[in-house]
Amino acid sequence: MAVEDAGVFPPITPPDDEVRERAVARHAQLTKPQGSLGRLEELGAWVAACQGVCPPKPFERARVVVFAGDHGIATQGVSAYPSEVTAQMVANFLAGGAAVNVLAAAAGATVRVADIAVAGETAPMVSKYKVRNGSGLIDREDALSAEETAAAIRAGRDIADEEIDGGADVLVAGDMGIGNTTPSAVLIAALTGSEPVAVVGRGTGIDDQGWIRKTAAIRDALRRARKVGADPVGLLRTAGGADIAAMAGFLAQAAARRTPVVLDGVVVGAAAMVAEELAPGSREWWVAGHRSVEPAHTIVLDHLDLKPVLDFGMRLGEGSGALTALPVLTAATKILAEMATFADAGVTSNDTSNDTSAETAVTPEPQFTEPEPVPDPEPAPPKYTVAPPLDL
Image: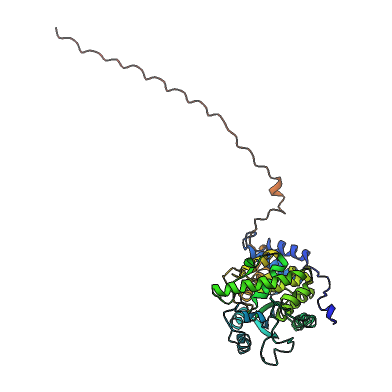
């Protein structure tokens, strides 16, 4: 694939609306009052529409891909942790000791780690698609070259293809990279016209001085990014990073391959916004797993018109919020697939749409009869008292 073609995607076909309508109709026949399961009903219908079949099939192979990469901006004191933590956490993922591993196991998913731009050595099994060691210092230079940007987008596309061809029926995108919330905030601000103070967050838990440094870095990077804001590939090159570019390619390719994705927090959200620019309509194939406490994430959700499944005050990344929501999505799918209908269970429904007697029966009006008057009782005969005879 040529450099100029890496960001070109086929038209995105939306999930099947006819199947979604059938799913809504099926919910009306399940043994429960209509609408009584709230958002679960909406999520189940979305899964059915994505699969193109009703009832939907419960997920058999949920797969998490954690995109790892470092960012030069971390040297400016915008994170509470040093850059070497990224490579250390990749090793932790491979050892099964991170939150993503625990949450994936609980949700019935498996984890893949992809080193796209870690500033250090990682295991060969995760570095197949590595583009470079870290991304550029975005407040004063481009994050990537044009060739590196194309390579990163291609990496994400190839990873999506590998997972889908391997049988994945639902995907989760996760992130790991010290300093990665800073370029994410720049991308979000550039695509929405937001000011730096509206998108800057605490990330790994920076103090007030770190927050000031981070805001300044976002301000300076945003000046450069706004010049290419209409070009999503140029935006990734200027102010993104190899890991974020790979995530954008991954998310757009999943939509092109008609595979549902559960989104995580602000870093994945930034990549999703760029992916929607690359392949309009991709967002129809995504559900927001949660709302991060990072302020820019709410801007992402509003921009993509996505309603989060959970709001637990999380901000870890790694795919943790999406994995916490995955069991809810699984439950919504199984309800639609496995719950009995009124007819199956022999339970009386309150549906009178096929009952003609309900429409034709006439209830007689009550008859009111004047009560008969009660005659007054006859007066009792007078009683006379006879005086005793007088003694003379």
